[in-house]
Length: 61
Length: 264
Image 1 (cartoon, rainbow over the protein chains, first blue to last red):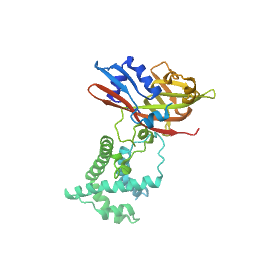
Image 2: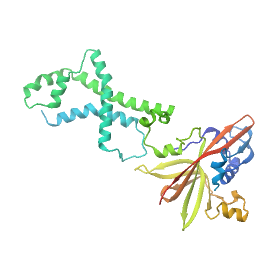
Image 3: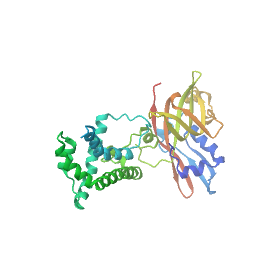
């Protein structure tokens, strides 16, 4: 069964150059900011932030 | 009359209930339905009764009312064949109508099941407090990985799992792409994108001691997809990722996490 992966997320992580930043986010689960070009070609600033710090950073892995 | 005929007749009468259940039900089990027989039977009979109601009403409206005397006679199947002859003649005379009644009812039951399933998935009826328990599917993993309990839209699922290799526990993490079930409904394997791993010994405490950059603790697993066998996983952590878009900034955030711990 396919897991959820929205178009918005795909736009960011389907671009190979963005993957390292997303991996960094996966590793630290805390704020990571960077300039990204989405798969649609638009440039955007993406900030990876844990919305509820208790849930995300409280159990940093 | 053959002794099997009443049983066949009962089967034909309650079959719509089972057809409806089969077409509506979603399950992660491919071969084993562990619903107790009595429960499945009662549900099937109740559903069949409900499905027959409109068909009986329509049949009466178009001039072919159901002859309950004849039906009971067929079900009771008396030994005196003379008593059955008029009933059998009536069935033979209206054979096409009777066949049409059952075939149309079976088709409608299947279509209704598929339609209801679509409505449940489309409008998330299984999340509603009143109707939810009645229409919730037997798909615990689907609900877990889709954040069924959460009250926000999910853009992605990040999983972290502990796997032991040569008695050394490793933490694997990555974006969940797909998951597969064994025929008995248990989770068989997870497919991850952008998978990384690190020894569990490089945990936060040791990290703080060494001053190592947290993201350097992980190392990337080369490849497009990484397959984790569920049987080898000690614990599984699930985090939902949400993307918030604004005109200038895209904010990607993890929100709630759910832990599912297995005992080996």
